[in-house]
Length: 369
Image (cartoon, rainbow, N blue to C red; front, side, top):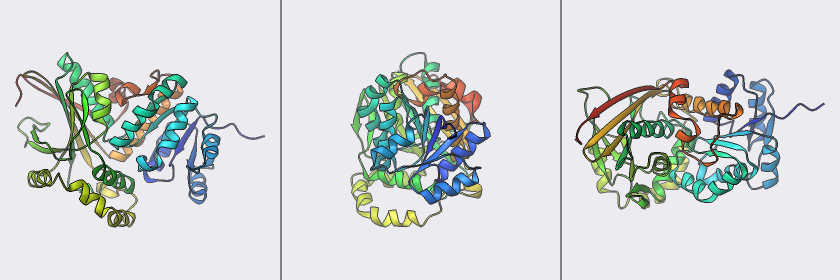
């Protein structure tokens, strides 16, 4: 007799992040199947996991996708770059009423998901939650909390990702993340300004933000395109949302001056960069794997400012735990949202902070600095 199909499917399970998601689900005692595009890799991973169910998927063959998804309740999608390979799985989940979460940090992919599949997912009963990953979900949760502390819809929300420690971002990111970043900086970049998504080049804005600790060294950051500009306004009501990456002041101002030509340069250099990324390590190791980071949400209304910081470590391990938490909530009937939703809607901030290794810090000031 054939065994029952698993309710949960991890797509892209054989990649660096996918394997971590599998480990996080197994630790929680969740039964799952794995899917991907390589039979050899799937079989090897299945054996290492004790013989879990596998599904071979050809993204150009709709029948293989439907066959892999039929009977599932939740899909965790970990294969990127998502703008290149993510849409078929997300679209099928939206149509089939299957709850879906992914690990993308690509703004264009999240915009595509909202534009093309929000109504479809609402009609089918699916909760589609892109960007349930370390670099998007914690800032989204922090933004929600900062807006709550403000007590009104913010005029503006600035969100900052701040890596800590000696490891470089090159060493601390996976191949998939590097390819996604390349896609981000060679494509269209947008920020949410005065109620509208508008084109704005990376590094168009350079700002200084206060450190988490009182008396700490101020943080220089440059604006970058990120999904928060799309998802945060929906649950905070903010009129302007900008996303930033902490970086040294000299580099920030050099990139700001070069912002007009940077996308064209990235597109021209793409073939060489893709080959170089292909030769890099699959994912971070050692100290780089355990990198610490802060995220800051600064909400402003007039002269009133509220700041919420979340601190964490091991970004990809955290991503896996976020994915597993969504899966657990979905299987337990705790995911009630329908459509394409923000992380704060898929997993309320209070539940995220109670379940995940993130620490909350707050700083407030009466006036804008």
